[in-house]
Length: 411
Image (tube, rainbow, N blue to C red; front, side, top):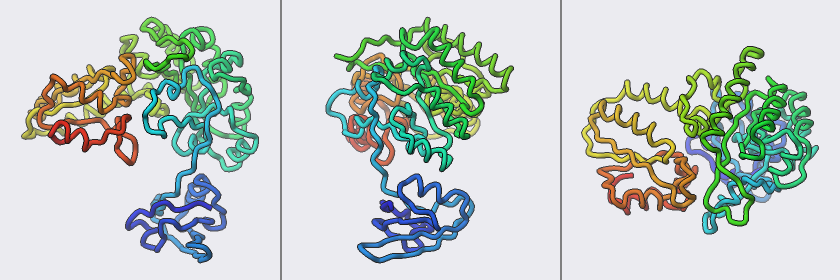
């Protein structure tokens, strides 16, 4: 049984009389014990029967006829995630200062969220019962943080003794579960020979392991009393790209897929030219920062073709340091097409430290500080990656309305 948290207005469930607070017991003949059961029960259905309990003892059966791929309009109450029991030496949550909202300190390690949202898990607390359910219900694809296939190295990275990863991957892939994997590259620990072995070990599982992303470790200035880690240098980024591109060519010739992909940050740090967008194949790892910039360039060209003149004054575009030059190039071309003065403001991350250059980790206070001596113009444009879903809050809980009040212009 799950609780219906919200019913979308004018959706089929709303029209049929389902109410928030109703308890969903089953869909057709399938009992619903959690959010996964609910979404599985919807797959491929043109009509469904909801078995509901309202209040203490009122039982209801409601038939919904659905158009092709139409959502019934039910928002189930979200389950608490299974918590991560690892103590990873590179864990970003451990690098957060005190005083942020509680949800930011939650370390989840939940196979359900991996299937639903593409969250990465290590499989370290996945029980035999969990594995059986993954296989039985065909919860595919899943997203797995591997980091290293060398058992000693992986245990050190994860901060505790963990089960060997290769047998777990074998168990899942042999049952037909598709996997996407990642390596967080920590210099001195899982680079070099260890990285080469890990990539080769995972490539042997293709096509059941469909893709592998290599991303650089993210470090903030809040690392007191944490293990010593170094950032990925330009030199290491370049040598890592050399090896990845070599493996890509070998895999392409052998299987028709490149398999392994480097995060955009490697190309930026190495000052290397990005591959063409086609080289990222199906962009499996886009949410992992792999292929975002090449995709932006393609979409930018489409936008420029559609842009028309507008009557506006100066508009400021906010971005992190790593994307600033790219956005500046686009803004210059867009300004020519729209006849609007576009001012790109690269915001320094004072909160987490200068080494954190991605846009998504900027705070409202960072943005305000960036305009201490800069006139924002008539409006301020912020990328949606700055905000959490639903509440439109920045990392320091500042709202768009707070920024509008501070600047006195639309945001």
